[in-house]
Length: 234
Image (cartoon, rainbow, N blue to C red; front, side, top):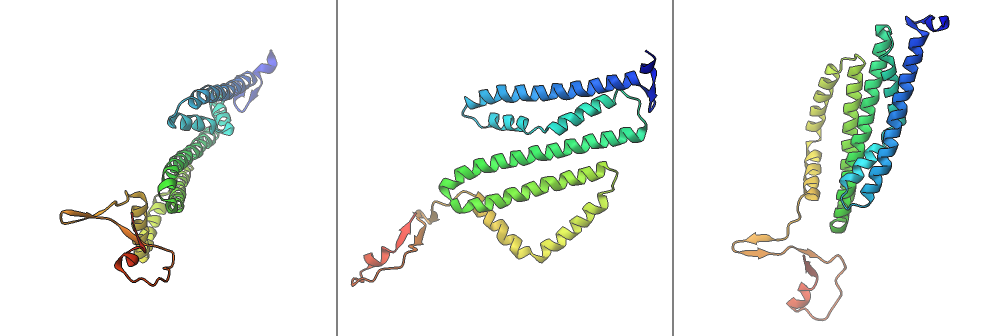
């Protein structure tokens, strides 16, 4: 047919139809693979006690539809003979989408391991949960900062000067608040470290005692035993 030979942007209409078919087929195939894998692996993960398979299923579930669609568009664009600027735009959009999807997966992994650690710590030290949440937030901010820098670099923006400026600024801020950072790192060391069970003194082991938070009751006895009753040893 003569209409199939009609040229648009340097490609015949038949080539555009093939490109569209490739894009739709690749996107549809990826979506179907994701759906089947999530359903099958989710059923297997529900019967196991390990959590790694649950994480893997959740990673598959968080594969965004727009990301799979963009992969299909990129596959379809490979069939065409597009101008270099157009291919550069499509390639950059695909790389940025991949970076964003990677950031989503990285945030999911951080949340998964923090929740697992939080469940264990909640039985031992409930006060450390807030510190762990702040640590997880800092890790996610770091991940997205790296994603942003890589995306800017992919767009052709020189991020070397930006990274150098952030490094110098970070050193200046760290020197200005070094006491606060020292206290913060010490608190993280206490929260994440193994709690001390005793203090060795010479050839003996002493227990750790803490004062009873309740106010002492007035008694008529002043014996040493009554005074020692206001302390508890762990």
